[in-house]
Image 1 (cartoon, rainbow, N blue to C red):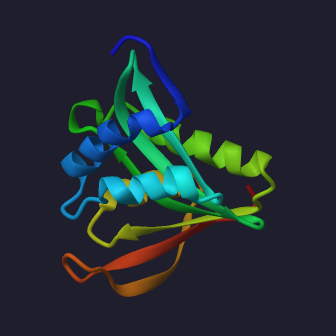
Image 2 (image 1 turned 30 degrees about the vertical axis):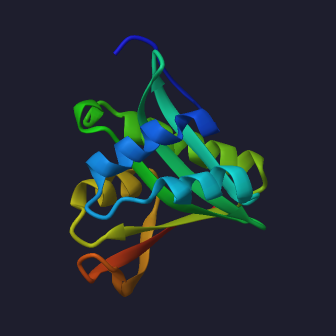
Image 3 (image 1 turned 90 degrees about the horizontal axis):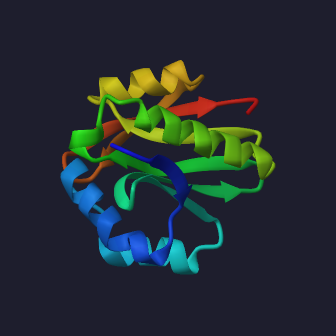
Length: 149
């Protein structure tokens, strides 16, 4: 890792983001889904972790009125446990706040304790469950909120 920075995702990043997605999730989003988010969705805002030109992670959210909804966040396996997920989410939070968001929400797998711990450390609290939310495993999602951005 040399020059790590967080920047806005651009269309040229999509192939690398799809690879991060593939290495991170059992049921990854398609290239077409990311194209749609970046090129067609005015509510979507995506960031990448850039390590001297290599995409090492990404995160996205939708800004709807005064709420931000995190759509996804992932870091390449070789870059995990370095604080990049925390840094990336903090930049998303800060950006949402500058855009007028007053709160932020996300869903997380019930089995994903490391992610839940990170979210709690950043001020998110559990507010409910979406039964069977993850269609690949029928696993429940915990709904978490961060108020007063």
